[in-house]
Amino acid sequence: MAQPAERPSSDRAGGLTNLQKRTLSAAVLLPVVIAAIYFGHPYFTLFIALFAGAAAWEWTRVVVQDVRPGQPAVPIPLAPARPWLIPSILSIATTVATVLLVGFQTEIEWITAFGLGLVVVILGTAIARWILFGPDWTGQRDFAKWFTWGTAYAALPAAALVVLRSDAEFGFATLVWIIAMVVAADTGGYLVGRTVGGPKLAPRISPNKTWSGLGGAVAGAALVGLCTAFILNHTNVWMLTLISAVLGLLEQGGDLVESAFKRHFGVKDTSQIIPGHGGVLDRVDGLLAVAVAVLVINISAGGSVLAW
Image (cartoon, rainbow, N blue to C red; front, side):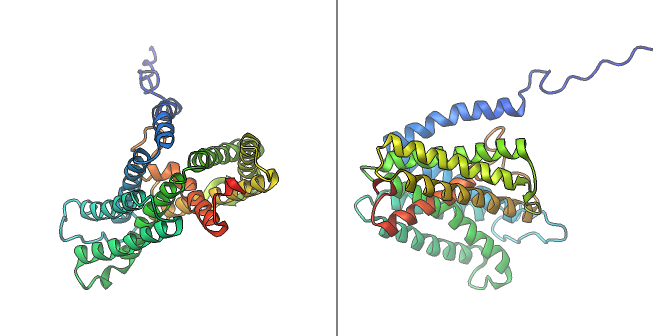
């Protein structure tokens, strides 16, 4: 008896592989990102507000739709059929308002602009908790905590990116350096980790990460710092290389933070908004950490790190 014909997989049936989806998504998004960075405010501010709003939606949706075994759903009286809807709207509104307010205050200093963003996040999340649960929200302390952290996690690094780009002299170069460094850290970590392997870095949080991969990430970031220093004729090549290496380490830490969040709530991806990549948070976790770190370094030094 003849064997039944093999059912074609989605790839053979004309569907796209995950790698093809990732490639196409990158091909579409990368020119948009580069154009937004190049043209700066207000285009960059609006783009970052959009991406930060998507990140806020993803975080809140995961928290509200908690899938941990035995964990009761968060009661949202305003929208019981779609419990994630109202919290997501409130988180998005706070996040977008933070980015736009900081972005359109181009005449104030970095630390003042970022402080303004922090105030907006605190007030916005406090108002949101009151709208959701009234004056007595203490019965939902766990949700309130995750909601507040999620809004800050989306809004403040996004505001940091906007503040960094607002530097008339070094804003464009800073953003290109940061993104190249994050991509190099991710790529270096993946390639070295897959090739060398070895002991796991944090098996309970991210089983695929290894210490060798961490070394590859740091090396990739350091290489970008070295190249950036030569391209900009930086007076202190090794200082920028060292700073980039440390930021590569921090980028991997940001990745682990987001992995811990997803593992805590039992999800693989924060959403499927970017085909082949998952959610916005899945792609920019390391970038968020690096953006805040670079802004803190600049504020501490009284100017752009690229000007040292």
